[in-house]
Image: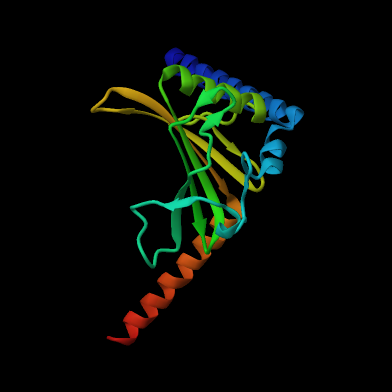
Amino acid sequence: MKLAYTFNTLLLTLLLLTQACHSQNTKSDQEQGSLAALDEKNGFQDAKFGMPLSAFSGMIPDENNESGYSHQTYTRLSDKKMLGEIPLSLVEYTFYKDRLISIQFRAEGEENSYNVLQALRTAYGPGKETILGPVWEGKNVLMNSIKLIVEETKKNYIRIDISSQKMYQENREEAKRKRKEKAEKNANDL
């Protein structure tokens, strides 16, 4: 009986501490206005979500793009591939219906990965910690980070994905509608 009481007390204490930490993080984010800054930026460097592909010069399509697929990914010749003083190994732009929907960039190495996260936390607050890395979710923009290790080379890198929530919602709704139309068409063939 005493063991159950102690366990329940410990569980309740942990629950209260977790809630207190969560409310502090939320308050801190609101005070900094960091997620508002993410929404205000609405993209990465000079690229803004919703911009048409024609607004970019020197775009090279990704060799893995499939014809007829609604998303097309590109790299840009003119990119300086730097985030301040941090070298980036990759910057990609994904378009949906000829409009910019997401931007991905990557930095290699432990120090560069750390510096990217520090820059993001400085600009947009601490983010919400997940098993893969911090996530920043504004009203209009979602940004997540994934820290990975390439087994063959044993090099680590960080990948940052920034996307327009509104445009992704449109994309999901269209995909859902297409699946429903396809199911109805297939049902008619029964």
